[in-house]
Structure formats: C-alpha cells, structure tokens
Amino acid sequence: MDEIIYAYVDSIEAPASEGSGRRTNVVLDAISARRLESGAPLTESAEGLSVVRVMSTQLRLAQIGAVPLVEGEWYRVALGGDGNQPIAWSAAAEREYKQGERTNVRDITRLSTAPGSFEVQAKLEELCDVRPRRRPRNSPMPSFLGSRKPKRVRVLDVGHASCSAIHDEDGLVMGYFDVGGPVFFHHRTFPSQFAEAMNAQAAKFVVLSHWDFDHYSLALTKLPELLKLRWYAPIQKVGPNAARLQRLLGSRLEFLASSQFKLNDDLMLVRGGGKDRNNSGYAMRVRAGRDRILLPADANYDLLPLRSKSRLTGLCITHHGGAGAGSPPAAHGTRRTAAVSYGNPNRYRHPNPAAIAAHKASGWTVAPTVNTPLRGDVWLP
Image (tube, rainbow, N blue to C red; front, side):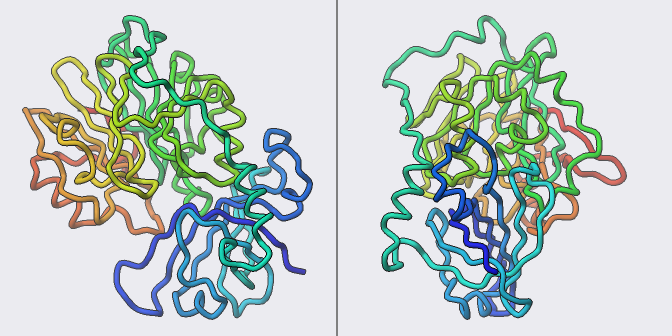
C-alpha cells in the first residue's frame, strides 16, 4: 500500500553535465498525510516527519510527472510501487534521521497546480509558518556577549555538513555559525568520536546562515544543548522538520531581515543578494584582533557585499568546495588559511578540483577537514 507524504523541496543537485541518463538528487522535507490530518502540533512529537532523498534520472522522473521539480515548492508524493520506479530513501525524524528506508516514488504532484489541493497546501503553509517576530529597524546590538571578543575560528569536522565555532580570548566558544550534521545518506561521513558538548557549555548563540538540514541538524540529533542558546536566522520558507525546530526554539529564535546585523563590533552578519535559499541567507565576517575571517556558508561569493570580502586572512570555502561558487576573495597577509568542510566519500563529488584550484590561485592555503590519513577540525586563520 502506498504511503502518502507532503514534501517541501529543500534542495536539488542536478548532474554537472547534460544527459537524460545522469542522476539528479532531490532532498525533501516531508510530513505524512496521516500526521497532517491529525492536526497535532509539531512540538508534540517527531512522528510522521522525515527527510526523503530521491535519486533518479531526468527521464525516469519525467515518466511519473516529476519534471521539472522546483526548489521551495510543495508536492504530494506517493511512496511505494515497485522497483521499476524512481528510487527513494526515507529517514524518520523519530529515529534521529539516522538511516533511510528504501522505497520507490510512484507519483509526484505539485500542489499548486493540482486540482482540489488548495486546502491541503494552505494547511501545510499554516503549519510551517511561525509568523516570526522581526527585529525592529535601528535597534541596538544585543549585549549578552558582554566584553567577550573573538580570537580564532574553528571549522568543525562534522562530515559532509557545516559548523564553525567562534572562540574568545580565553579559548572558550562564544557561539556557532551553523550547526549542521550530514543528511542521512552522508551519515557515515560523521566522525566516530564527537566531543563538542563540553565546548557548547560556554556558548551563547547560534547564527544560522540558511534553513538547510545540513546546517541545523546537530540541534535535533547530536547536540540538544544548542536548543538552549539564542538563535539568529533569516526569514525563509521552510518545510515541517525545520518548522519543528523553530517551534522548539520559541522565543530564543530571532529572525533577521536586514542586509546586515551586528552581534557585537567584531561579529558582523551580511545577507547575500540572491533569491534562492543558499544566496539569500547570511554570511559572517569575524574580526579577531588583526585577522579578518569570512564564513560564507553556501553563498556564491559574487553575491556577497564587497566589504565582507576585503583584507581576509581566513576563509571557510563556500558550499563544501563545490562548483559554481563565484570568484574566491583574495587572501591577505601571511596567514592565509582557507578551510573546506566536506565528507569523504559524498554523493555530490565535493570538493570540485577547479574550485579548489581557483582558491589556491587567489593566494589561499587550503586545509580540508577531511585529510589523508588524518581528519579533524581546522583553525582559522
């Protein structure tokens, strides 16, 4: 019997070259039809929530009416069928998204174009709309950091995901920029030993660059301590799993909409100039003594303000070193470390050799969190 889910398209990784036989990876933020119909609040439990990965060719997706898929749109998906249909894996939130159960995609229908789906889509959008409290314009900087000043930045080895810690002059973690762990199909890239819980005890904040699962999932899996901190995040449309996190954070989550925002004089957030989720989120520029460090998350460099890219001595390479990231900013000074966070192996073939070569040509010494034979955190600068 088919299982019906309603899914928000989180991301689409298309093949690097054309061809109907090349595979496309789609990540869906999903809720079961039964859970939606129950009307249970998202904070009640994680039952019925899942992250679903669809991997198939454009030709086979077209045969079930799933082309073109559009990021940021809602779909009705029937899972089941037989092995002749596109393959999917579904990882349940109840089991901390650890393992995907294999199934097939029998049908995908875009809700906005499906007859009689207006009420369902309205219910989904209401469920996932937190009606955020926005920070008033020209409001003063938050003062909860006191006199603490950043000294260094540590890009954590979290497998194929993104997480960076800002350390103060005493070596303690002030806060985090992104707190991601791998999506379940990259779960084996996560380190076997992960001892960040002790470091998180001194932290005061989390800045979320954008609402992709691999940038916030540590809070729902490995580091529940993060749910007690102040969070700052962009206003973006999300699916039910991200919306559940927003509900759990409650008043500790502050949404930002301005082009820039200061946590203090040394921690500046700048918003990307794009329209998609990756490029409409926030990057962080850190002033650590004489050093200037940029954490761009998954944003294209060309869509970040010029002032955020000037005189940099430290950089976390955008989007796990993937292709199409724009022109790398120039390295400055003598300490020129550019970390690249990725898991090995990964389905997206990150990092891209040409992208890494472009960073080296811009003066950077590239330091991956994955190395041979060692792996581990990378300090900036």
